[in-house]
Image (cartoon, rainbow, N blue to C red; front, side, top):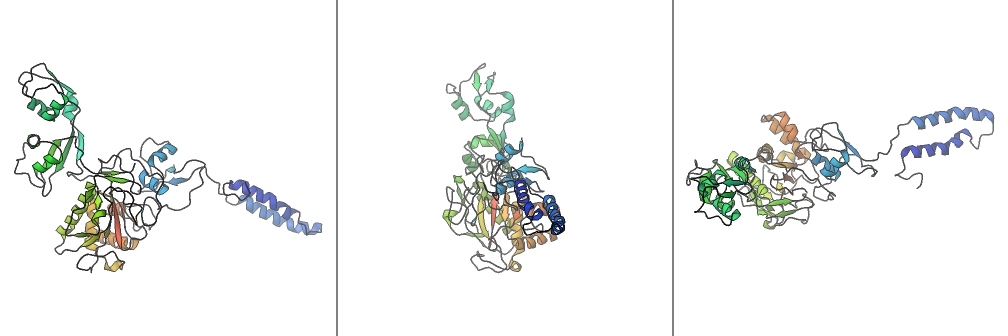
Length: 462
């Protein structure tokens, strides 16, 4: 290894440089008299002290980052191109909890030091290279909207308390037992093949089976009890029994429904990270009067992604009397995976959408550069605010100049500063890793929204 090798500790290099230069200053070849040596010696000593006392950068045995306000393990792992599990292992963490000012090792020890600055590479698109091993969450991110696609599933407390078997009492019926344990006659007879629905007797032991997850959600426009029963694999009779206060023909939008089912809350699944993942049972984004879809083949997402997009545009339509249309370019292919022109868009959670502009062609606002003064800021903020308030967006990439206009507009409308600081990167600088809305290059003509992992998609990011 040569003396100038970048892997060699700086202290060793400085020591060799000092040894190499000392003879030059203390015993110069051109000096012929003692007087000249006496004149040069103070200069040599001063230079030697300057070298020794100069700040020395010692090569660390592992790159370290300092946790900043707004940071999370997932964001730090994204920037470092490693997984959350790896960071926890290298730092001896037992949970995802971190604190501001904490030093975290973000690479194996004895690895070359990381470059200074912020790594914006993983897992963004438009020419960036994918990360090596993005994070794996021990618990999926929960989306907080109460609806079919993102309902909260939990075990039946009653079934948990009673246990897995039940001893028949006088007067019991199989229908009553199924109702008491929040299950169905069909499931009871499936678990107990010898069981006759019409012939049960006192003292008989019935296997109740594992408790079914309880699902609660709010009916939306167009929902019916029959459609809900079919979607979740239960009978209309059981659904009516679980919701005795809801009349079969009187279910209206806003009505809360409760049921017990083993059918996944969402039929689709985002698997793996956005830059190296896939989409299972992708849902095609439905048409809407508020947007134009460029390519049906690239308009597949998770059920949550497609529903949140539609809901946000419904919200914009409800707020404005006149209609303005934008373009939606790519979400994902039907089965996810890599698609041309993108590094991300692989698991159904990313969408590219053109900005609302003050003047747009009749068909739709195009994917073209425009001046910040031409942004239709009221509509643009209405669209973004829906996702931000409902905690549905993980990141939204918007040019920093446009962020400034959105920030000021939202502040004038009375949005608390604490929320703005959590939502928007501006005014802290385009390279500060804070906020949901962030700057990233090549987003002057459109913005990129990345939705959170649905809580039911346990393989999302892994």
